[in-house]
Length: 622
Image (cartoon, rainbow, N blue to C red; front, side, top):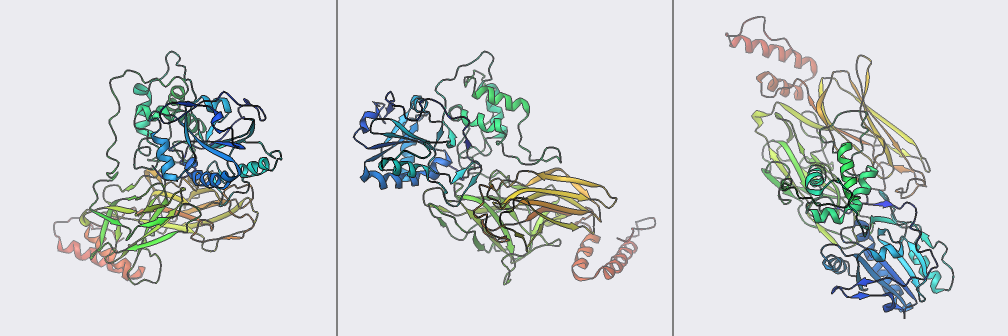
């Protein structure tokens, strides 16, 4: 199981509601299965005043979020004669998944299985979705439990509790104010899948696409909420695959395709997209091709080369079942007694279900600051992990520096999943031989510490810029905002008057914060200005907004805001392996520019005179 986020989940609002059966009609011909395969009709609960059929599914993050709420509602209304029944898709593992779900979430009401016919007869399209019947088996309510969760967003608390309001009205003999509310959640599979001639097959067409685009996240132990490593797993999720592929929500990627080329762009080609849609909605043919893509590496292994050092949070942290968890800070001493150079790093959550994202910063020993910048260029962050973002592996000859004695600071953002969980995140580091490092890489930051967003403002613009005094190589960009973030753009304003959009994220998603790695490092000449522009939505129209009436300021917690434009750079002409560069680096840290130039020139002349084999006019002064 994985991080429980609405954006990671296969989540969408319905289109037009299924018109059959209509609200008020009597529902009788519904059969559900118990764990032994025996069929049961709704008459099993005819003695109840109300029957609440809750359609659920193991592996659906939204269903997991609502499980505890359903359990509490069932306990609350049981004395009033309200019977709750959990209805699970039968799936290929029968009752096993449904009973795992029930045990984990402490569900005390009965569990039944549906082969797809009950959902079809009742008009249920998603999990979780609830159907409320009265004692005469008349359909009185169909839809969502409440409005806390929506597509790609979550409120801190629901504004409308649709299921509770429906139950209260019916018990009091009143009509339900809103008897049908479109559900949000994971699509329920169709009963039939006719196979047209020439349709794509899993073995020949679909498995290779999934292996390239989906399985890196959708495998056990990774961030995807369910695995897609076999035909059975993919077929069970075919409806969900088709929906998110058609909507363009998976694979997740938010960069405007008009600007920039990126090494980690996971988008499907038009042909790949059509193959997945045709297979998912055209029979789910397995095919008879003898070949399948090679299995992915062990999910317990690392995506980076074998780490030289693994550093863990000092202790496990307990994440509550619900509510909002403030950012957590954990400091650990990695034991470095001399400077270390890092060429790759990967953050691995101990519990991907609850870790929304993690940043690892650096802190000098005894420093009064929570975090410090390190290295010659002042690197602000060592590594970051967000859903779907790959670990970083720097090009040959490049590395980040961790000074001797410095500490690692884990900054953790947790999201509850409906049950109490524990996490102990760790980071793997691949060290570089210092003699091989030509360029030092730094993560720098454009930010607004005085950010202030007025109440009820739908489009608040913030801009920050940085001028480079030396030629630099831009390697990647990482925009970061919180729940009110709407868009983010990076631009280069060149000394010759030209401008270029390097990255445009027109629809920022807090749940998918990506690092955009340039396909080729971009040289920015001295005098270039890097400009970041963001727009924030603090209006009531932003469903993720916890309080549109608040004046929002910069802060650490999710309910605060941030304008953070991270970017990775290196000096274009740096070569730490050369003698002159070593002297230059030391002088840079200890002298002003004029002394540096004089000393560097003198060093060059001295070096040339000592080496008589060198001919010509000699090296130019830097």
